[in-house]
Structure formats: structure tokens, C-alpha cells
Amino acid sequence: MDAQTKPRDTHAERPQPPEHQPDQTREGDASAEQRDDSANDKPSFRDRLRQHPVLTAAVVCVLIAAAIGGLAYWLNVRHYESTDDAFIAARSFSVASKVGGYVTDVPVTDNQHVEAGDLLARIDERDYRIAADQAKAQVAVGEANVHNIEAQIESQKEQIAQAKAQVDQTQAQLDFAQQEEGRARDLVEKGAGTVQREQQTRSDLQAQQANMVRAKAALTGAQLGIKTLQAQLESANGSLQQAQAQLDQANLNLQYTSLVAAEAGHVVKLSAAKGTFVTAGQSLMMFVPDKMWVIANYKETQLADMRPGQPVDIRIDAYPNRKLTGHVTSVQPGSGTAFSLLPAENATGNYVKVVQRVPVRIDIDNWPADIPIGPGMSVVPWTKVR
Image (cartoon, rainbow, N blue to C red; front, side):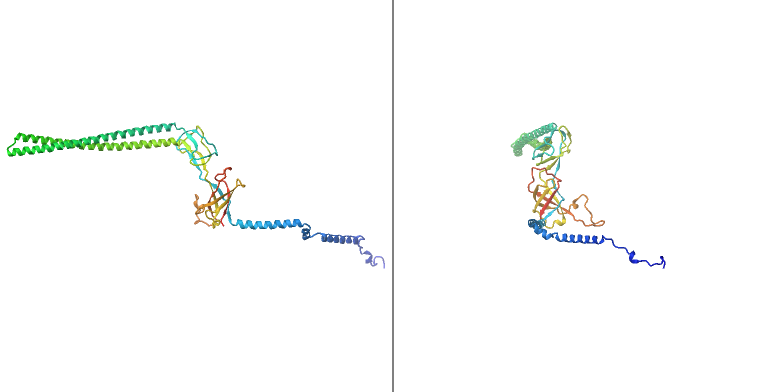
């Protein structure tokens, strides 16, 4: 056989493994054994707790205390209802002048606290004092007219009395004249008297009758005169009352020149200044009374156990370290939206049920005097309802 057809030696061509491969395998096995030994040597969580008994006891005590505190807090909090939709409210109002004029004095300043009756501003009073003096003079004239007419009435009463006396006197003379005329007529009829005497007595009787008519007319005139004077007296009394009303109005206008505090409170948004001209009804400042309360808009689902008189703990957002105490005064009979300018109309369109809020008034037991508190400031009330 030649060299080309000679069979190949398969054993001579098989690759042999490198000499260092068994050494690497042994090193890997050794490393795995070392890791297993180190894992076996690492202490468990229980062993660690045993190694630190004091720390373990402290942690356990803290956890127990936290659990007890959390349970107590939950048991206590469930008796309260709270809301962050709450604010301080007051019936603040505008202080306006009722008369016009130049401002002569403003003894207060912004945010100043005043007591009831303290002077807030003064308006020039000279024109109003002159008007009051004129009205007083008119009252004096009216009183004089009334006294004059009353005196005339008294005089007229005397005239009436005199006229009545004149009537009585004339009546007596008329009676005598009638008697004389009757006797004279009898004598003439019997032939014992003269015709001349009878005619004379008849003439006297007619004269007395005329005097009686004149006396009665004078009495009637006197009586009508007193009625006229009484009508004049009523008119004079009306003029006097009108003058007295003008005097009262003038005195009121004079008093209106001094603007005083109606109650204790704070002056805010002061716009009045000395020397400025103000008109009647012009606002000079805003006034915040000391009487304030809290309006808490609770959800309607929180009102099941809420009643007037229940205690309330209040935290002011501006002063979180100051807590106030109060009590529920009243619960508004209706939601806040029902009394808004544009109340919701649920009968039209698609309806989506939304939990409504109901205003609850809370009165504070004692407002702190060392911190500024006013309307609109946010608070968080906690009402104990159970």
C-alpha cells in the first residue's frame, strides 16, 4: 500500500485536555465549600436578637406602647368630628357719616381697639350748630304765639262771662218791663189808668226786648270768638311742634358730627383723614366688633350626633400652638348652597349626588387678647359628638 491509502490513526489525532484543567476544577470546588461554610457561620435574626437583649426589649416596649397609644387615639378620635372648612366670622360693618362736611379730627388709627362710646371721627359742627340755634329761635317764636293766643282765649272767656251777665241783666229788665206793661194795660182796661202810661210801658218793653236781642248777639259773638281763638291755638301748636321737630333734627345733625363706636371692637381699613370733605353716607372706616364666632362647614354625614352645647376644641391655622375651647351654638337648618346667591337646581339636567356642607356656629368660651384674630382666618374645630 502506498502512503496515500494508509489508514489514519484516530488515537494519535484526538485532542488531549490541557494539563491545568483539573487544578481549576479543584479550586472552584474549594471556593464553593468556603462560601457554604461562611453561610453556615452567619448568625440568624434570632441569634442577633439574643446578642442584643437590651435593644430587643426596648424595641418590643416601643412597639407595645405605640400599639396601645394608637388604639387609645383611635378610640378617642372616633368620638370627634372635624373639618378644615371652618373660619372665624363676625358681623363687621362700615362706619359712615350721616351728615356732610369737613373732617376736623380722627383720633383713631388702623387696627386700633376702641371701647363703646369712643370717638372715631369728628366733622365740622359750626354749620349744624347755627342751624340748631335757628331752630331753637323758631321754637321760641312758636311758644310765644301759643302763649299769646292762650291769653286771648282767657280774655275772650271773660268777655263771654260779661256778655252772659249782660244777658241776665237785660232779661231782668225785660221781665220788669213786661210786668209794667201788663199792669198798665190792666189799669187802662179798668179805666183807672191813662193811655199814655200804657204806651210808655209798652215802649219800655220793646226797648228791653231789643236790648235782650243785642245782649244775646253779643254773647253769641263772644262764644264764636273763642272758637276762632281755639282754632288759632291749634294752628300755633302745630307750628310749635314743627319748629320743635326742626330743632330736634338740628340737634341730631349736630350730634352726628361726632362719630362714636357703637360697641367695642377694632378699626380697620381707615379712609378718613383730617381736612377731607365727606358726604352723607360716605364710608370712613370698617369696624370689626369683639363679638366673633366660628362657622364650621361640616359634611351632612357628620351631623348625625351633633347637638347644640357640645364642647369643641379649636386650633387656629395662624397660631398652631394656641388652642381654644368653645361649644356648638346652633346648626343651620339647610345646606350652605340652599342660601347662596344662585342655589343649585337639581331638577334639571343630569344629577350627580354630592355630599353637602352645613354651616355650624361655634361660640368661643374665651378669645385670647394677646394675638390678633379676625374674620376670615382659618381654623380646625374638633367637636365631641359622643
